[in-house]
Every structure is written in C-alpha cells, then in structure tokens.
Length: 606
Image 1: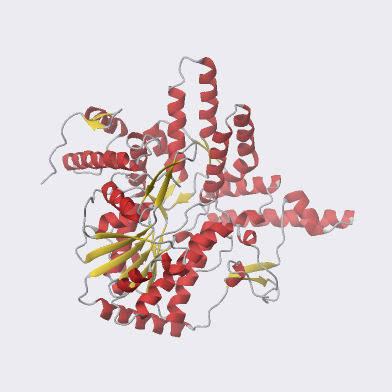
Image 2 (image 1 turned 45 degrees about the vertical axis):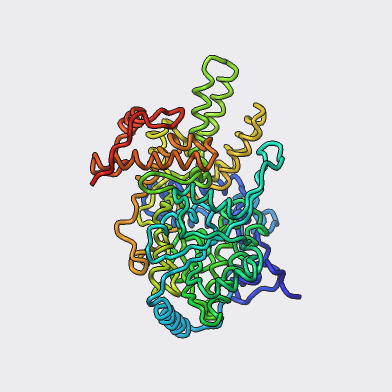
C-alpha cells in the first residue's frame, strides 16, 4: 500500500542501528520530534539541567559531555546490578529509575540517485543557463507571501531596485470580521487589499506593483488561465515566500502550508520555465536555517540537509526541511533553476526595529513582559487588583531559557536584501544559502537588554525544569486567579521557545550570503538589533496593542525619521545611545498618547 500524500515516509526512513537496514512500517510524524524522546523523568530533567550547568561552568562542551557520559554509564551499570539482583529487565529498570532510554534505530532522509559528480554537473549547467537567460532582461518578479512580515519588506526594497520593472504579488480577497462576535464587517477585493498594502508600505500608487488573485495551496496557484498565459510570457523570477510560521501547528496543517504550498510553487515555476519563448530565469525558495533541526555537535552546513541526530523542535522545522528536499528534487529531476535561501529567526529592522505589525516569535515574549509591567503600573490604589497584577507580573517574568543558549536573530531588512539580491545574481542558482549571523546573542545577554530597555527583570528558568515544575505551577496559580487566557498564552510561549533557548543551539554556517549574494560585511549587530526591537515595541507598537496596520505604518514612518535624526547628529547607530538618553529625546520629540511630533522633524542630513 502506498504512503499517504503527507506521510513522512516519502522523505524519511527508519534504520536499524545494528544492521543499518531500513526498518519497515509507517514513520509517525511525532517520532521525528525531540519531545517524543523526553519522558520528563525527574532524574532525566535534572540531568539536562546539570549538563547546562557543566557547560557554563567549564566552558568546555566536550568535557561536559564526557562527564555526562560517565554519569549515564554509572546509571546503566547500577541498573544492571539491581536488575540482576531483582530479576528485572535492565532496560526497563534503568528507564524507571533514571529516565535512561535505549533506542536501536535512527532516522535519515532518503538518498537520491545522483552522484556528487552528476549533481555538480547539473548545477553548473543550470547556472550557465540562468546567466544566459538573464542577460539584458528587465526583471518581472512574481511574489507569494507578500502580506507576510518578510514579504512586505521584499516589496518595500524592490521599489528602489531599478532592475525590477514589475512585481506581481499573489494575494487573496479578504473578509473582515468583528474580533469578538465574528460578524462580517466588510469584504476587500484583491485590488483594495493591494492598494491598502502599498499605502501601508509608503508606496501608495506605485505603478511597479500589480496584485492578482490566487492561493498557494491550489494547483497553478489558483490563478486564472488567461492570467497564467500572460505570465508565461513575462515573468522572469518567482520568489516563493509564503509559508506557515506557526511553531505549534499540527503536522497536517504545517505539511499543507509548507510542503504542498512549496510543491505547487515549484511546479508553477517549472511550467513557466518550460513555456515556449519564456523569459523565466529562476525560482527563489525561502526556507529557514532551522531545516537542520537540533544540531548540537557540528555546524549546520549550507550545502546539505542531514536528518538531525537530536530531531526537530516542531512540525514547522520538519516540514520546511521536507520543502527543501522537494526544491532539490525539482532541480535534479526536472532541471528547474532554483535558489534556496534559509533565514534564521527573523526580527525587525536592524536600525529601527520596525516590524510592520509582526507580533510573532521574539516579539511575543517582549510584548507580554511589557504589557505585564504596564498592567502592574496601572493597578495602583486598588489592593485586590494590585495583588493580582503582582502575581501576573511575577509569573510573566519566568521564561524558559538557558543563559548560555545562543539565538540566531537576523533583521528583516538583511533577509529581504538577500532575497532580492538572489534575483540580481543568477550565479546563485543551485545553492542553499543561510541568511544568518555570525554574532549570535545569548539568552542571558538578551535578558540584560530587556532589563535595561523595558525595566523588567526576567528570570531564566532552565527549560526542562520549566516544563516539569514552573509551567504547571504557573497554570495552576493563574487559573485560580481566573486568568486562563493569560495562563494559556504564557504556556504557549514557553512551549514554543523552550526548544530554542536550551544550551547547544545549532551554529549555522555562513559565507555564501557574502560570496554569492554580495551582501556586505559586517553582518548586522544582533544585540543592537534586539535593543531597537525592544524600543520599537515599547514606544511605537505599545507592546502589540496598536493593531491597525495603517496607524502602525504612520507611527513607523515618524519613528524612522526620528532614528535618522539621532544617527545624523551622533554619527552612530541609535542603539548605542544610552536607554535613558534615548527615552529623554523621545519624550521631547513625541506626544506619547497620540504619537505625533511635538516639533517638526529635522531635515535629513546632506
């Protein structure tokens, strides 16, 4: 019987550790996540905490691993002695007493049938074709995911690229509903949504942009036949940026958005490439650097995807890895000219923190801490309300994170610049390129920035202890205070971030971003970018309470002008200005309630 269309067996096989033979049977999606192998035994939990402490104390990860290996060996030998004395199964006893588990298999991605020489030859041929095809052409780019965080920045930057003559953006009509009642308020056509999006991006009326109706989860993107025919004669590049970035989505939803959507986009580009007299040059696929999963011993290389020894954190990572394999398959089997770009954890603009309303990933905990502190300040005078606010604030400040965990945060403007540059340099064809940084920031350092900028002292809780102890306690207390929504939100943040804030985060190889995409050195300063994220979310976004896209756009434009004034005056990035001095200048320049300038903006330098 053939595997279901979304089965992991299409990409992954289970292999015996002893015989190296492929084991029969269905691979369940949950088997591929790290949580499947953690039973949260109390000894296992404390062992992980001990490993984290050893790494911080010794500064030598290999030495810490050696110590832990000896501890595990001692546990197993103790279990064997007791099992022999009690007549029990040694493996079952070691799991009961110490949380030690024995696994006689591993997973790997299925191998393709091409040799290294054949792959190199195919890539070189496709590069040559792309260079010849691109010569002398004005670019007409088709973009999916234009309403998303990264997609908006791609659109914004494309306006200043003269080589891009037109950008065709896939978008769907939108039904606007009341947030509480669900009642339909209005319907927006594709044209209306496009016009509003351009206004939001400060590109109102720009003739470079055209919006068409479609859906990435449908064949041929759900685009009308006459539009497809016209596109086959005009489109030079496809940038596939649409994806689900929900880290807690179930497997079928993640697969549909990330794998099925990618396959539809790849087939769409292949049809364009094969059309008669087509000007098509290349397909740019936007993946994630976390397709490598939990790599804790070796660098995650740009030129290969290997099933991670420590599994995947979530179905988002897993299905994006599958999408990357599909992209590679379309290149090798069908000759599609492709580039794969793999961003790390995307945050706001490096200079300003502007994020066009994004409230996901790193923005989510920053906003929750800010709102909790704001609620505490507003609860003065009412003893009951004040007591509740203090409990909420105390709970919100506990966050799963190892102090030494390094997060690879990358500003959205750098990511979009890399994606746009991929269309300008056809020699990138056939490459997988990380859009990541070589100056990662630790969780401990992030908390220092939070304390300085938001005046919130977040206490890091070792992720495994947090899952076992702090999270259940927090849920119980908040439920007792009739704060189930808050408990759910904080629990959701913890479950999402705990996998990314443990020790031993993956180190992503970088180099092709500069060598092939011609991005400049140095790469963005991660700490400066995170500092501006905090300042932006506090002053501009009011910790996520400003929901209207056009109002936020108005604020971000004024904020950009303000940052430019500071940088023109000081000759340094605004992030280097002390938080107290920055706050003083902000309060002098803005009415904080209406976010309007109290005095006219200074003229731009030069």
